[in-house]
Image (tube, rainbow, N blue to C red; front, side, top):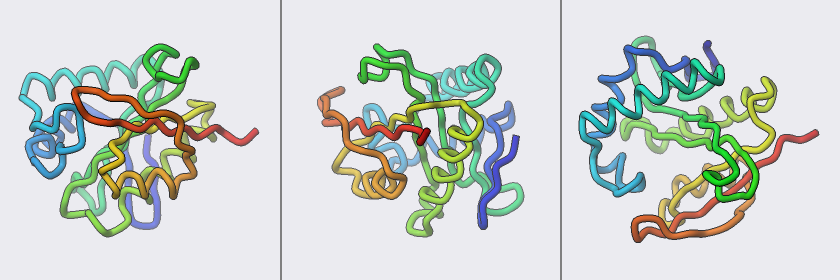
Length: 172
């Protein structure tokens, strides 16, 4: 599956995405607002990669590899089905996340890629509600969330870090 925008190509996650994901997950500036803020181990990255492939097989959607030019790996936009308990919303949702490689920062790639995936998720019926979870101190992600039209929902603390949930419902 491909999603294209004016400048980007987003393709369904595949086996060949692992090495690029692992490289991205080694950059301290990329992971500082993800989980513990530490680079991912090979084993942890492999687990995420395998879970992503399984999610695609089970649900028909999941993570997308972002490319700004043929053959490049410039980031990830993720969609992951969450149960009511996992979402923290008392209702099921599809969580949307993103990582853009530092070489693409400040170029609008995150907003462009996530907007395209948001639109596809709603048009394809993959989600009625999207959830974004981010650290409010990550002002770049907070701006993307606002640009996409998400509404702040609730804050919580995870691993000593304040996290914000925001939601976006499909227009009926």
